Image (cartoon, rainbow, N blue to C red):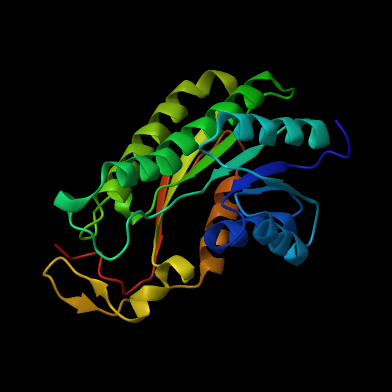
Length: 251
């Protein structure tokens, strides 16, 4: 191991929540591996970082890519202390109704949001189990869709509900190895994914409504708080959301 500090892997680090969390971790002294499909976007994140970063273009649906990611982290820093499992896609756009969802679109969302999260968690888990000192933390990005759906979002909602199950299973299975696992459910952080809400988002009653958003920096601050707890403590689940968004009280 060379020049060890706390080491984090952030997936989906080329934009949005992933970029914000990676920058927050680097600014707090973590060494951060930036993972994502777009090399140019990772380089943009790296250019903004104040600290040690490593860009590893990664398709989280590819076992070979995921293994390469964690091999590069081990080679560079010798261990991993944190995985922020963040890579995700929403799925078919345009408000595709449930009965019209194509099987290939369903599978594409499941592959990234669930199988990708599993592959990264498994690689991190194995590394955390075998390293010395043993242990680490996995934080999964669940989204408010892990709790309640939006209209016409069955693939995304199903995968995010499944992430909750994965988080709980990892929390249990990681105990003997000193591996903690928690989940952050995020609502309406201001990113490219939420930009359309400025024109109106479909509501449960069929109407369109402009929804409030919050600064993604506040999501990054929350993840950093979770990450910097000692392994004897864990935020099992937390919801951070735009205060006035239509979540509490809707239905």
